[in-house]
Image (cartoon, rainbow, N blue to C red; front, side, top):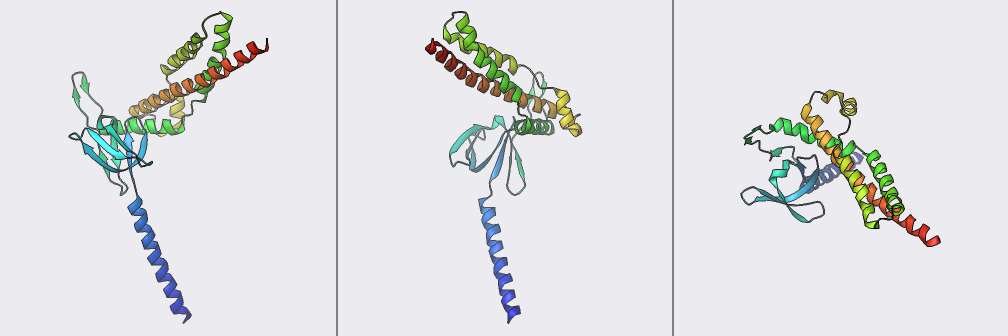
Length: 217
């Protein structure tokens, strides 16, 4: 009797596990990869305007449109891939092959995930915080305070992260030039973004401090 009871429990467990697997598969979503290394989970998507536009639902349930020109692939939940990137012939030469662009995308993805750009954030904050004091000392219009961190972010935006450090982190990919380029481009974007964010926060802190000092006089 105990053996039959045990078998019943096993059968019930198997039935429930199969139901859970089926539910997970029905809820599985596909992943959209951008050329810059960004990615997002999508569902209920379709191509419109002769395949030039992808209409999809994001993870928040909102429908979005994106030009396929900016996309690399859709990685489906079942493991298959739909490569959207198409190399084209240009007057000055060929664009990247699918494999080269894949390396570029992976480089961008790893930079988006792992590159922190804390130095750019800290530098932006310091420059932003100091600029109101500098402008006030020169008796200039406070509006000019925003120019200094803006110039700093522009300078940060044209500088590249050290290729040597990238190779140290990913020695197995040191010969993959497109991976390195993808990583550097994404890292540069993150440096610029962090510099702008740090500059704005520092600017607010600096202006607040200036007003407090002026109010105590």
